[in-house]
Amino acid sequence: ELDGRSCKRNVEAFLLASAQLNIKFISLDTDERILENLPLDSLQPIRAVDFDRVDGFVYWSSVNSQAHHKKSWIYRAKLDGSDKSCIVDDALTIECIAIDWLSRN
Image 1 (cartoon, rainbow, N blue to C red):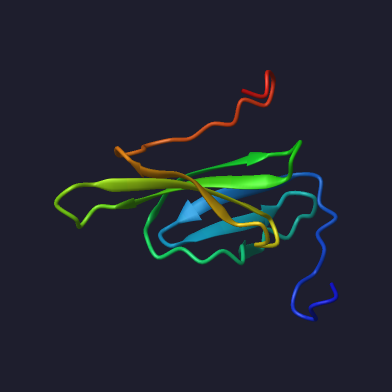
Image 2: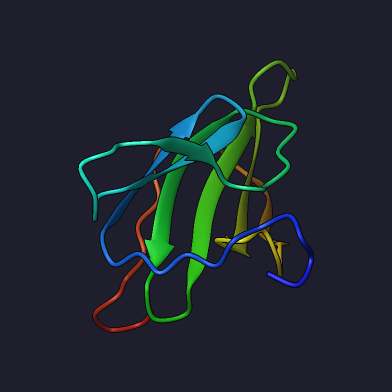
């Protein structure tokens, strides 16, 4: 890409997995299963992750489990880390997340 640091992914089949403070990207298009960290900065543990193939956004929930009042957030960003935003702030504990890809709700 133009930034000289990232590559455009031309991958059809992939897996996303949360691992502590990172979201792992694994291409399933090749026999080599290389784990890559998505370029997303998270200061809180990531609980759940999903991907919206239509819009190209990764969604994930983070939780601050060390506070007296557990606080959760839902974020979204593109696979390259751009367009990151918090879409839900100060929610109760979020255990999982799912994108409604069929009806787009």
